[in-house]
Each structure stands twice: as structure tokens, then as C-alpha cells.
Image (cartoon, rainbow, N blue to C red; front, side):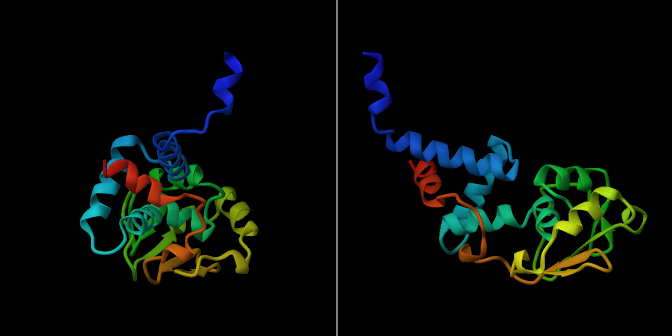
Length: 168
């Protein structure tokens, strides 16, 4: 009896739930926040799944990570929380802050000597840079040029399954 359970094909619901959990974990977002991102994406014009990933990608902690100021999203979140990051020359300490095209994200002058940032910046290779961001390594700043397209987001999440899960 026990062996039969392992051979069963996962249900559609379990696949959808697994995708949602994967996306939540990847971006470090809580359940309620994630649901809010989904409903906001559903109200926008365009493909809901693409809109959802786009708004997750434009979080300040994610942009800080993508620019290479932090080795992980968790580390980026901490940099933001500890007031090491500025957006358009103003300190922002909210990891979920939505960065808009044209916004400049930079490391504060006082924080530029942090070893964590320099270690992370050493790992940044020019080829790995996100196409929707520009990076100025000398000044430790970057700009969101445009909202990312789905093809440009290097995430192994099937957002369509998440959309199906929430649209029940």
C-alpha cells in the first residue's frame, strides 16, 4: 500500500502550489505580500504572469542583488534594511520599494567601504548583467533602464501555473 503513493502523478493543484512556493522563496516574499503582487498584476494590462514577475523583479532588494551589491537577495534585503542603499539620492530602507524606470539605485557614500559589497562586486561579470539595468561599478550605482520583459528574467518559475492557482 505504501509504495503506490510514490508512483502517483502530482495533482494540478500541487504543481501550481509548488510553483507559487518556489517563486515566494526565491524572492523572499511572504504569503500576503505575494497575493497582493498577484492581484496588482491581474489589474494591469498585459499578461498577468509577466506583470507579476516584473513587479517582483523591480523590488529594491532584488535590484540591489541584480546590480551585484549583494551576493544574495537575503543579503541585499539586509543592506536595504540597514540603510546602505539610496534611490534617487534618498535613503530607502524598505526592501519591497518598487523601483521605476529611470530610478538610480546606489550604495551610500558612508557604506562604500563595506567588505560585503566589494566581495559581491568582484563576482559581477559584465556578461551576467541584466539587460534592463545599467551598472556604474566605480560609483557603485545602477539605473533601471526599463521594466524587464519575461525573456530577460532569469527565473525558473512557470508563472502561468501561479496565475491558474489564483484565478480559481
